[in-house]
Length: 346
Image 1 (cartoon, rainbow, N blue to C red):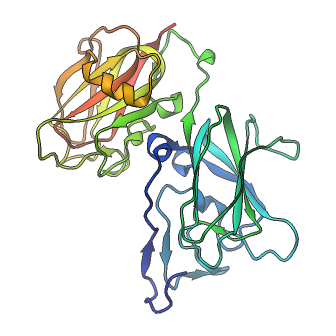
Image 2: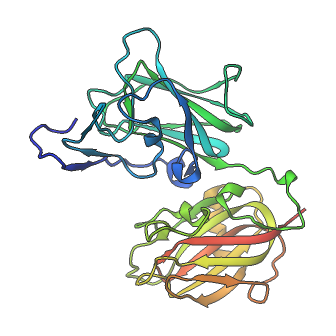
Image 3: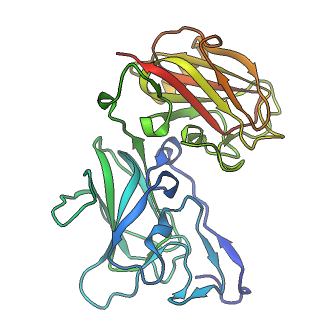
């Protein structure tokens, strides 16, 4: 808890943490931004379980209480006076392969769970008493006011997760980082698809800088809600330009591109361009190196502030099927969304 001598209303931010690679390369599939929600939980007396799915960093407000006691920015259960443990079942906003998790107990000090575990399932409806759960993270010791990053190596796709806390207590945020999956076999191969979309399996492979924004938001649905909802780099003070590489959810022949600078007004890029290639094999690092030599998909285009820029086949070079695109932001600035539409390569 916060120091008792702080004045009521003081807001304390969550402790900072150095993010592991999986937390920067993959999106949080358990984020409320994607529609993730808690479908059931054993108890949420002190704080609602859905709070731990918020995209914002948790805060502590000194002196803030509600009808159930101290207000906490997370999920908190009452003190257990019987055998057993508490749990919460989360429907992921996007079904996907889980690459790692963060069980974040920020601001929970005398009320954090001593241990937690995570299970998962894949089902078309909500889980019930007949659901078979698979253990992903065994019971793991937790500390108060801390991030607990756990990397996973499991190629299966999941729709729901169950967080078990032993025996009770509070968790500020549950973040489940992973790669969204898309069943392309169920879609019309002749139609135009947004193959870069996060929900379609699009993925950020790498970028040179992301000082003010998170690159994966480039491929999120909808338009950005503010200037923080996009990819923004620091001000460039040396030659060159900034870049970000996106792996498409499916190889496609590109026919339409959108670059949206929504909310970026004094800091939009002067120009943009795109390169692309069909890549097979290799690692993310080898892709980043190869990308320097990829052919041009879209030549340099001037951009404007707070605007959706659309490019069609009259601007796009006919490269055939591609699996990756590299967005060049010249020289620096911010972009809210990048959308690549194409017809699926058979």
